[in-house]
Amino acid sequence: MKCDCGKKLVASVAVFVFKMFAGITLCGGLFSWVYTLAPTNVWRPMGPSKRLFIGLFLGSLLFVAVYKIVSKAFEGMSVVLKGLSYGLCIWAAGIVPGMLATYTFMTVNTTVIVYWTLSMLVLVPVQGVIVALILRDANESCCCIKKAA
Image (cartoon, rainbow, N blue to C red):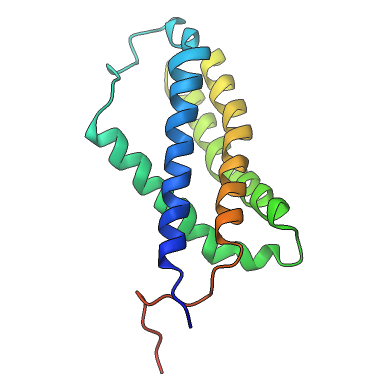
């Protein structure tokens, strides 16, 4: 069987690049005004850093790995619908509870919470579609993991 590790890495890099582009375009540009809403004392100084890039890339790897694990649940769907469904599941199970916790326990402006929640409602399903399209022909096997005989 052919190894699909390369496709998984390509999918991870594609999601990483999408996250960086979206973050720079939306949070760093178009909607940067939400970060000036009071209270502003909750924000760390933000700029390009190794920690940010490493965190986003590791998150992208995890996003792809989980897709490979759960993609069988979306059997019979078109590739795009699989990706959208996966992204919506991640949004509902990860983003929404995280934003509710942020709203409950932090002094972040409500507009920022709403912006993050709604932007992720769009961006995370798009990431799911990117992964689904790249991995649509990927094999179930991987040369990196030896299966028990």
